[in-house]
Image (cartoon, rainbow, N blue to C red):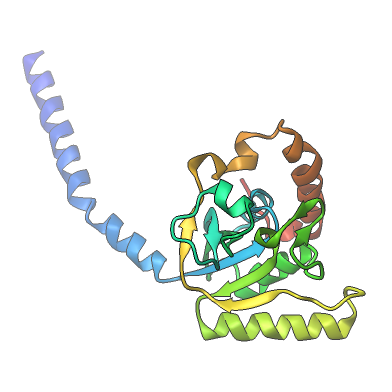
Length: 213
């Protein structure tokens, strides 16, 4: 009996050592995957809505709600709501370019808010709710501007698109309670009556782009 226990112990120890020896491969794999990611910062009204939309897309690595475009460092939500910081409510989006294209990321952006209303989305009014693309590279800038020209020419809206296309400078993450807001507060009033219906429309239009799980 003792021999059996000893043999079992030796076998489990060898299995553990082999598993440990394989661990260094994981960071290398993650680093390779990160080479395929790209970051863009988008403002399309309340960041709770923007976050909820992009979290559901296949290929989105992370979505972080925050503030960008203003002149105040480390702004609070209350300061931004006072409309004097110059910041917009935005989401910093990291996406896997092997699973979703920049074209699709921008298509979702313009399809899920009204880019013709200055400083307003529905009942949310103020400069913090402006439509804005903070581009991180020239390709993002060129594609965003191309989209605007083509959408205006197509007559997709009966008013001109006023989306701001500006070079990204700094991003300040919002307070923790703003992160993953819809998923954590689905029964809250704004989530039920504003975000919920928006998500239903979005999921019908982009059903082929949604995460499978």
